[in-house]
Amino acid sequence: MGQNRRYGTDVSRAAVNEFLTRPYPVTLTREEIGPEPVVTVAGGETVDVWLRFVEVRVQERAVVVAYTDRAVQVEVARRDGSRYRVWVWQGAVTTRGRAR
Image (tube, rainbow, N blue to C red; front, top):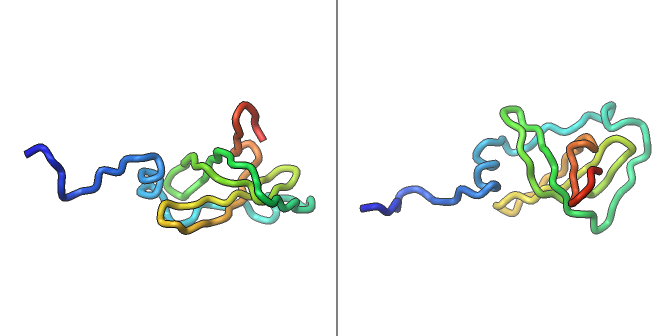
């Protein structure tokens, strides 16, 4: 008695976020990104980013891959190894000690 052998015990932030979200977050439209040129980043900075899913908002660790004057494109790696890229507002991205 006392051991849960039937269900997993992973309650990490990543596991909870995967449970709460659909496979892909809501990304900004081209109109929201704006007409400014997109600057692509090689070896981008690792940041914390707020992602909007239909059901919930979650904060994830991501890598910056591009940006404009008002939006940032980040790449998020899921625990299963899959990756996706999503555009978010600059205010949704934070680095240590400063906002992007």
